[in-house]
Length: 278
Image (tube, rainbow, N blue to C red):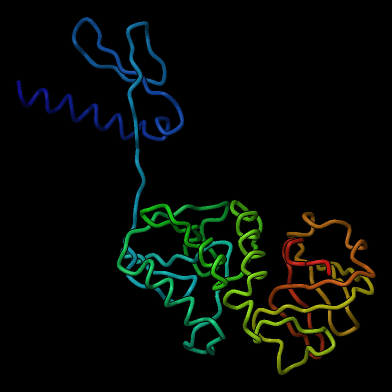
């Protein structure tokens, strides 16, 4: 008799596991028929009752903090924090950038050897096979957002991952106005386009000047400061922008990484928020 009950329970548990995706988004009903048998479904008869299902959240243990925006979980997964970028720390084939160690130290103090909750967006991994996520502590602190609030990170927009774009941009504006972190560092001061050259184009930049023309090729569109310096609008993001001609004649600040091609330079942007009107 005991074995029979255990088998029946096991069958019910297996059913519940199989039905879990439905449970997360709809009511699940349970009722007992005249023979004492239990039934489960996403609908029920007159005697059915709704089960109270609380699937909870899965937390992960942080094994290591690599830098201000990349962590390693105890299960071996690397996680890249979505929507932000922190300066580089010294490593193989890369030099340290101003503010990189400060961001890493803060993140270590918050996350290393602690549990975190991950929340994804449209894209689940980047080209390096890292998990893309917004990271939350056990007390619901949004780490991506906190890094931006403190001026330890800049907003890094990668459409279609736009879930927390507005609060991140709001946090960045506040940090910039208060001159927190990198916003007080001369290394991240705006650079006029005519001063951009082969010695200072590396890393995340803020380039300003007046847009004088729009240039379009088969693959890219450019807002031109000059014949040698421009703002490159990523093709996959072009639909997010207003007509590029509306920028002509206006003073702007373009934020992003600069790509060099011989003696020409282009600031790569993916979202209208990467271009500030001045």
